[in-house]
Each structure stands twice: as structure tokens, then as C-alpha cells.
Amino acid sequence: MDQQNQPAAVQEKQQVVFSAIQPSGSITLGNYIGALRNFSGFEDAKARLYCVADLHSLTVRQDPALLRKRSLSLAALYIACGLDPKENIIYCQSHVPCHTELSWILNCFTYMGELNRMTQFKDKSAKHADNINAGLFTYPVLMASDILLYQTTTVPVGIDQKQHVEICRDIAQRFNGIYGEVFTLPEPYIRKTSAKIQSLSEPTKKMSKSDPEESFVSVFDTPDAIRRKIRRAVTDSENEIRYDPENKPGVSNLLTICSALENKPVEEVAAGFAGLGYGALKDAAAEAIIKEFTPIQEKYNALLQNKDELSAILQENASRAQALAMKTLRKVYKKVGLLQL
Ligand code: AQP
Image (cartoon, rainbow, N blue to C red; front, side, top):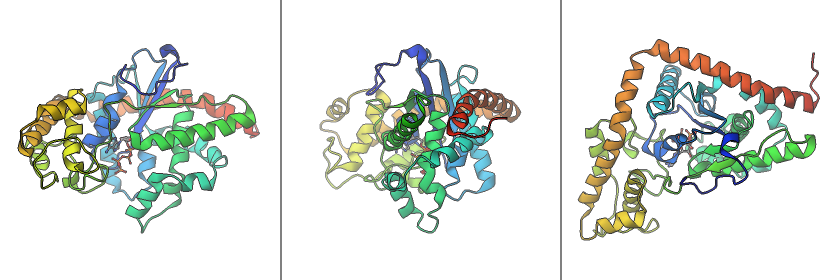
């Protein structure tokens, strides 16, 4: 398996895989390369849970109607990307109350100083200076709850979420240190070729779904829109194609995209463009994206034809998740001394 940090001690049959994405915008190429496409490939795991993190997305103001629409859309996208809802548990975070219940408990085991160090909190506070709410600050605690509720061993995420998995481990270790082995310690799963994808308009910044439309390619973009956005991607005034993220962030980002989608080392991709101009690189990146997204879009569009069926899937899967989550929550309530009737 192409993985950097698969926990050596975990046998595949004991693996519990959990990950989530916020329905806070149109899912981007960054979300896809960094996370979504890495959700497949754990067929032998004991349980695989993929959550639509709707509660997390409330840390930034959302349009309610759009949030509902995007939540269903993200669930359909999970399935369109190959996650069978019978073999995986695909559900909305707000449909499983255990997430928020455990979150309160873990808030009492997390220090302000730890949360203050979180890069995402600093970035998002700067981005949303008029709405630095307590939820944004305690976001990593809810994320820790998401993960720890299922005794998760493996968390496929993008590199930008590594810090949040680390704080989750710290919280779990602290809790276990006081009450015994309650939580399994999870490991982030970050594929070597799942590098961070940068913004098309500001390639020194991460590509984000809540940023302006021209800065990202969405999984739902038409081929024309993909070609147009990639053609407009910011590069530099030279005309040499080489991988050099510090001095050539735009070109390096396009190379990274090709490398991730073609599953080839970035140096090999760069060598293939020797003597060619930026136009050739942009064309290749756009076509690689279109090739990847077209079959997903076809499946996604078919699934959205039957919203009632999707809702039924989400309901049934939320019950499966809740049943698993209750086991951990009951144990936690008992350990911390909440009265059991
Ligand atoms: N640019 C990226 N490159 C690689 N991986 C990325 N991820 C996000 N952006 C990139 C990974 O996608 C997963 C889903 O993340 P999320 O929705 O929970 O939150 P996020 O990291 O904050 O994603 P966005 O797109 O930046 O959302 P907004 O704009 O709402 O904040 C994670 O595994 C993440 O690593």
C-alpha cells in the first residue's frame, strides 16, 4: 500500500477507518486528492466510516438551504467515488448525537494553550475576523470526538489536517492516562502522492472550497470550466517547467496535480515536459482532471436522481454509526462518573 504512516501494530482486520469532509463549499480537487480518493482501499478493515461534517461547517456562517443541499450532495459524492454504503458507513455528523455529546466531555480534557497553537484556527480567524467564534476554537475537540467515538485506528486526511489528528491523540492519551485504556490511538493516513494542492489564483496558499470560485477546480466543474480555470492558473514569468515549490509555486502546483492523478513521481512528470512551455503543462493538467472527474460526475448525477433513496441510505447508515458510537460513549460516561440509571 502506498502509505507513509500506516500503524505497524494494526492488523488490517482490526482497522477502523474514519474520515470526514465539511459540506462548506463545492468539493475541490484539493479535497479529492488530499482526502476523498484515499478513502477507498481499506476493504479488509473491521469498519469504515465516512462522515459529512455538517456540524463542523457551522464554525463559518453558512446559507441554511445551501448547507442542506451540499450535505446530501457530499454523501452522493462519497458513493460516486466508489464507497458502497453497505460496506462503508456514510452518514451526516448531526444525525449521530454521540459526536456532540463526547465533544463536551473532551472539551474538559483539552487545554486552551493546545487549541491556541492550531494552525487552522489561526488561518481561519484571520480569514473570518468578524466571526472568531468558540466553535472555531474548539473545532479540533469535535474532530477528536468524531475519531475517538469509533475506536478509529486510521484517519485518511490531507497533510493540513495532520496537526488535528495529533491533538486528538494527545487528548486520547491524557484521558487514557487518567481512566485506563478507553480510546484507541489513531494514526493519520497520508498517501505519498496526496500532497497539498494549492490555490490556482494564489499558489502560495492552500486550495480551499470556501475560497473564490476561480481559485479552485470543483469535482463538479464541466470540462470547459476545468480547462478555463487551469488555463488561468497563476504561474510565473519564466518559461521553464521544474518542480520548485518555493520559487515556482504555480508551476509546481500543476506538476503536483499531474503527479497525483497519474500516480507518478513529480520529478518524472517534470522531466516529461522538458523543452515544452506552460501551455502544454496546463493542457495536460486539465485533461488529467477531466479524465478523473468525468466518471465520478456521471455516477453522482445518476445518484442525485433519487434523493429519497439517498436520504434512506443516510438514515440507515446514521443508525449503524450511532450503535457503534454508543458503545464508546457509555464507557466514557461511566469512567468520568456520570450517574448511570
Ligand atoms: N488543498 C488541499 N490539498 C490537499 N488536501 C486538502 N484537504 C483540504 N484542502 C486540501 C483535505 O480535505 C479534507 C476535507 O477537509 P475539510 O472539509 O474537513 O476541511 P478543510 O481542510 O478546511 O478543507 P477546505 O477545502 O479548506 O474547506 P474550508 O474552505 O471549508 O475550510 C481534509 O482531509 C483535508 O486535509
